[in-house]
Amino acid sequence: MHRYRFLLTRQWVILTLVALLLIPTMIWLGIWQKHRYEMRSTRNHLVAEALAAAPVPVERLSSPGHAVTRTEKYRRVTATGTFDTAREVVVRRRVNADDEVGFHVLTPFVLTDGKVLLVNRGWIPANGAQTAFPKIPAPPAGRTTVTGRLMADETTAASGIKEIKGLPDRQIMLINSAEQARRLNAQVLGGYIQQTAPEPKGDTPELLSDPGKEDAPLNYAYMIQWWLFAAGVPYGWFVLVRREDRSRAEAAAQPSEEPATAGV
Image (cartoon, rainbow, N blue to C red; front, top):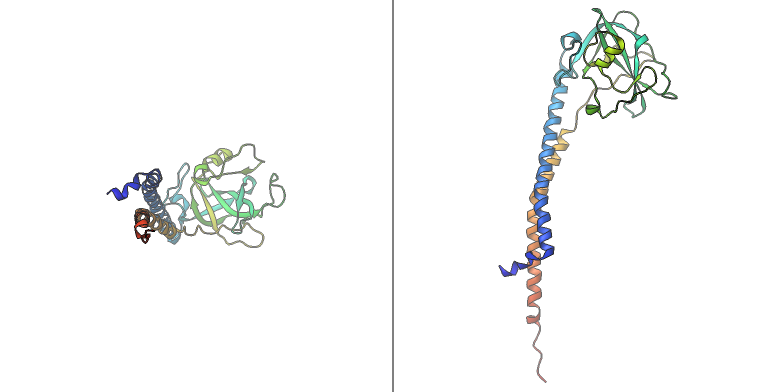
């Protein structure tokens, strides 16, 4: 084994330690990508099931103070009542499908029993200064039936959007039913809905697109990639050791291969 004593040199000790650190790190990254794949696959499955289910009255799934669950999120619901445009607000810094910055229009929808459902009617552009309350197209007047996707209350932790104090009048950063219940002094159903019907007619807010699918297969590919890298580290280390050993053996044999010099 004396031929491999070079492994005890400073250079090779450092290289070996780096290799030993890389293997568990890459295995952990593969496990993390596996968890991401499972999480995204579960989310895609829940969204697909929710969107495929038949619409139900919103009060079957939500009530004042209710926290919308993962299995309830994106469920299609219906509600009958009237829009209260006098107390609607806009949600700042929201983008549409083309990444244009604007507002979401959040309008209280008073149900037939007096409770309030928050309805995100869609996106409008931010024309001019965002400190002024924008001009908002009116919703249908009178008794109306709306359909939408049930959504959970927004939080900074889930959305990454920071709550800001001192905003202009009737502007908010996050949609939160508890805060809106205090503002409206009413019984507000937990969560809110993203309106999908009635369809827009003329100058109305742009309805929000469906949530789509997250790219779970990409995380699966990354998982395989990291684990292949982890398997490749010891193989690469072994190849380098063999190459170093061969180079040293060739260098040691070099003087003996030189032809003998004739005596004078």
